[in-house]
Each structure stands twice: as structure tokens, then as C-alpha cells.
Length: 344
Ligand SMILES: [Zn+2]
Image 1 (cartoon, rainbow, N blue to C red):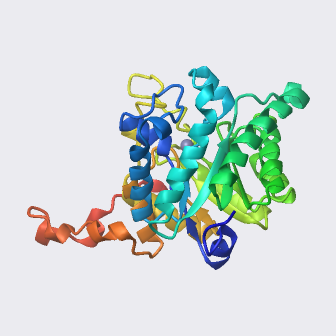
Image 2 (cartoon, rainbow, N blue to C red):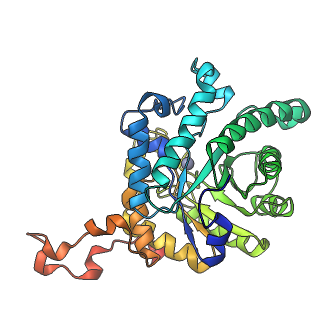
Image 3 (tube, rainbow, N blue to C red):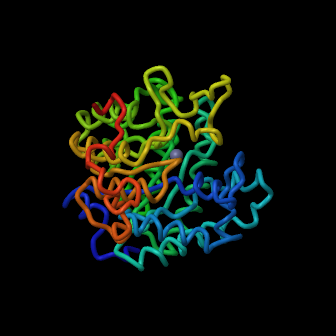
């Protein structure tokens, strides 16, 4: 059931689509989701908090409201003793996304992700379990009204192909993006570029990467994916300073050598100018769906939207440092911008 006049494929045909994610991380920071299990109980417990974040991303220029059904699958809800809330949580998440999308001209994406149930060594049996989870989630999502589906943070190509198949059976546009936790390959052994090619060959409308890597370590892979496929390409990095030594935000370490992921990552955050530079760079590479993942927040989305030449509702309150009482007269455009070496 498509609600919007212009669907995702028409919008991509016309130009870059801006996405914004990071709902789980942001709502954890705001005190509505428990770090660790990361189950979006907030959808039922504090629906207004979810709507507010949707609205902030909408005002910041996001073209897509992603229903907060990440980890709202049977396996995860069982872990936190809320399996009985499964259907209500999934339906409510899509409803909330729809309510806010209608405040602007945004699309609603259904959202499914890695399940932790897939096992390539026991593919036949576990595939049935995974398929059943995706089918129930997306059946509810379709009934509540979505424009397309984002299947994301896929560790296994095998699991991503199941997601793609379920989405295609529902006759919806499919965006399928891989996690890139490992240096070059999915957990079932496919080079990330090859895995995207296979997804494209199986009918994915949009392929690419999300999460795990910051712009610096995601863009080189994205450039190769762009060259390898004819379909649309998505890049949704995390706003953290990953580099050649620390490819992913999971591998970043605090000054005392402890793992910074997932709740001590603040020292590694990019600033808004760096994420704006990412958006420009991604567009120059031919990326069609440009977004942000865990760590994302409305100020990044606005900076990215403005970097792509847009004026968005929250641009009304974009910085005007010439009016700052201390910085005022001394501000020079270039002095406001602090870029790291990879952008220089
Ligand atoms: Zn993420």
C-alpha cells in the first residue's frame, strides 16, 4: 500500500534521497532504550518520544521515516520477555512513522535487520526461522502502510537474500544494505562488493552499506560497489572517526585501551561539517541514498541536507555565527569548518 504520491524509485530517479537513522542509539542516549539488548520497547512504552525523534529528522530534511522495528523481531523480544508484544510493537512503530511522515512529504520505510538466528552451517533450517520472522514483521508493516523496505546491517549474504525475497514477494521496492564489520567479507565469505552485485542480480533496487564504518572507511568500499552495480547505491555510515587501523566503530578503543563501542564512543564523533563533507563526497561518487546510522542525530541530518543544497524546515535555526556575541564580527566562513585529513 503506497501512500505517498512519489515513491522511493521515482525520487531516486530524480536525484539523491536523504535518509537518517540512528534511532536506537539516540533513544538510548535519551533514556528510552536499554543498551545491551537494544530492543525498541520505547515504541509501546513512550510512543511520543519516538514521534518526536521522527519529527526532528523530518524537520532536518530526511526524506524517509524509518519505522523503528529494528530488533523488534521474535528472537530479540523473547530475550527481553516481551514476545507477546511483538505484533503490537511492530504495528505501532509503522503507525508512528506514518503519523509523522504525513506532517511533511516523507516516505515510510518498513525495517528489518539481521536476526542472529541465521546460521550458514545450518542454512536450511535456520532460513525457515528467519523467513518466518521477516514475513510476520513485514506483513504487519504492509497492513499499516509502508512505501518500501530497508533490510539492513546484514552480516550474511544468505540472510540478506531471504529478506530480499520476502520483500519482493510483497511487491515492494527493496533496499538491502550490508554490515561491514569484517575487513572485506560478509560472515558467510562473500566480498562486500560481490555480495552487493549478487543482491542487485536478485532484484534489489538499492544496495550498499550501513552502520559499522565511518565515512573514511566506508566510502572506499562504496566507490567499488558503485562501479560494480547498475542499481541505486546507499551509504549510511556511522558518524565516528574510523580509520585504516580501526575500520569499524566496534574496534575503536578508549585512551585506556577499553572497547569504546557502543556507549563510550563520544570522543570519536565527527562534527557536523565532516558529515556534511561526507554527503557531498558520497554524491560526487554517485551514491543515490545518502544517510547516517548509529550515532546519527538531527543536527547531522540538517548539515547533510544543506550540504546537498537543500533548505529544510529546521534550517530556520541553522547557525548564524556572525550574530554570536563573542564570535560575531570575527567569524570567517572558513574558520567555522574543521575538517580531518581525509577531506583535505
Ligand atoms: Zn547503525
